[in-house]
Image 1 (tube, rainbow, N blue to C red):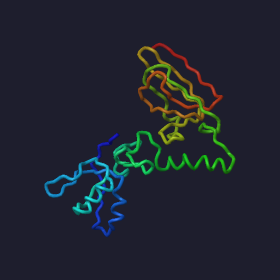
Image 2: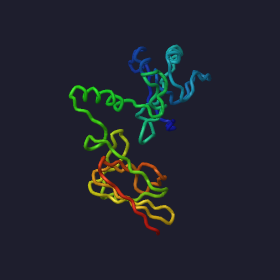
Image 3: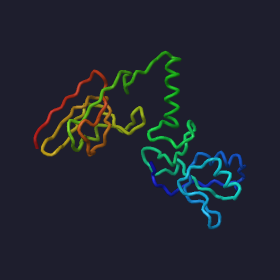
Image 4: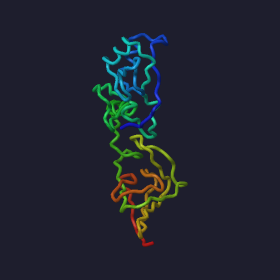
Length: 218
């Protein structure tokens, strides 16, 4: 996955940086631009940097080096593989969907905290109970009243909406209008006016609460 950014951060030993710190800063990162020594290209854009390449930069005194970072990533909801670089876990570029950073720390720290306090989170968003999914009954365009929901994020960090009262969601598909009643304190996992496919998860409700569907011709 590549966001296509052309922006990067420059790294140069000229700024009082020792060779050791210079190497540690570059290893695992990805180049923003081609690196030339005179007419000769010694490294190409989007090349991930290893110790061998760092040594060449030091020998040929190639500087400044522009590298991609999460700060310059153009993706709005995630960080692309090339802007993140190599995973310190396995030394290769991160896999799509791999948990990194704060989320990775939480996934390790939360079970330990629960074990210490003997208070176990068994799933769900609001009450500690398991959550149930509400799925779209058909393909169509989602519509709901945005004044009745509040922007939030799921426990996985994805954008969502929290509804404080029972909410009606409509799904318009050709000549049929589907109406779905979502109970209070549920998470809406889709955007208003978004096109959804049949059986796509559109909401997450607390276990034990009920929802119902009805449809009418338009």
